[in-house]
Image 1 (cartoon, rainbow, N blue to C red):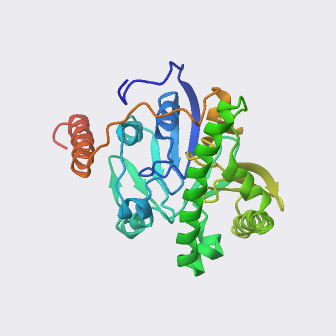
Image 2: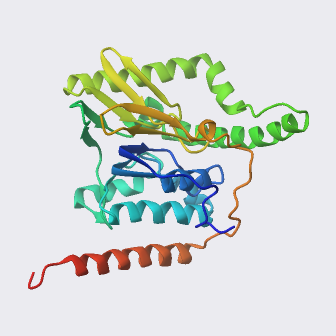
Length: 300
């Protein structure tokens, strides 16, 4: 099965807006196969990429990029070429993209912004930000953040082997890393402080809600009179936030909805080299330029 072949057949669901974050493309923990599957199954007017889409921290240390990663990029670029409003708000793991924000960079219709605003169909104003600016560890103790990233990666590795044993013993999948986060009292307090800080900032700025990612914890609830909307991640939960055409907001748990297993190996094993990736993106850019030239009016 190659990367362009859907895992299963899904009818396309039309949403007004889709929000995804923390895909961490470039890491072995990224479920790019499930993400590509999700992106094939939806169409939308607005696609918001809410940070940590490409994991620059990891790619600087080692290269991992398979066919599913390629497919995710192609699907995002094709959504933009198809007329969707695609906005990329960089996070801390893809902070290398932030230096291009002041330049107003737009690649194949994908707009780079430090933060974004969105008005739902029913008139609610949402602030869209990755959220790391409200994480005191990331802001003031980068070394600790990097150590935390390594520990989290280790926990995910242990989690895979732990669950292989559980499956052999007849037990269902159980997320060790998620359980550890819930059990650590300070982590729970940190999540609560994070949610409150974002909601309070959005309220002070006159927004009705805030959409974020960063902490890999999908949530949709009211915090101090403001909607706190975290779209989760595509490493261990595989969730997205969607807006229906009437303005209704919903968290989609792709694994639970489709009865998928996070233990299932991704189908695409062929690793794409850096040069192959650059070539693939160049092809998409060239296609976008050709389409733009075709659409220009005569004499324009």
